Length: 287
Image (cartoon, rainbow, N blue to C red; front, side):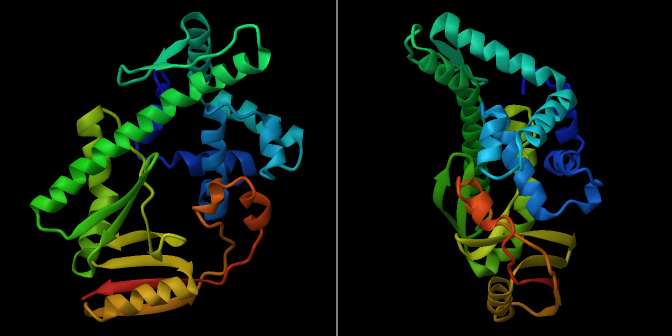
């Protein structure tokens, strides 16, 4: 956000902002935050900036009651004091001009009837929502276009088969699998900073299908950690073993999980939030 120095400093220092917000919401240490809690906090953060109110979060099952939701709102704005001011400036801008400017200088017209309270409220939500979505989508698109160009130049066999808002889906040839794992973690942020001057948080996930993905960790140059559904993790490891000399060990992860794709569907919070999924952790050592 423009002027939100605390948030910018957190991103620049490599702090996991969503994990920190989850720790605040669930009143626990950051190291104790689960992947599910972090995902919910991430969705809440975006929901706040896109104009959702406490009632929406109660309705979607993120919080049990209005008291919890309102407390989370207050904690969020206390942590990032410049954010509320920026959001109000965009609401004022659309009421005065009928449009808002984005960070890239584009003008977005938002038509509304000034005599209609619902249309005014909707226009003010859009005045906050649209510049944020515009920036994230344009930044992601420009960054991944530059990354894809680098892949082509270096002979890395990938194809982009979907781009939705700020999410990019890549098909990766198995011979380039580990190279892409490295670059998705390291190169995306530096590319975005080169292009826009700001860092981009990047949560890459892998899977045998779009519907069943999981995040991964790079433990060192040759060691990786995959944690996800048993079926998905073991199938990926089986395929990789056909092409690489790997040492693989498994252990029970035993955690609750929300499918990252389903997280953004309105019904997902109540249908998936407490659903147990049989998860395992695989430690892969590339020899």
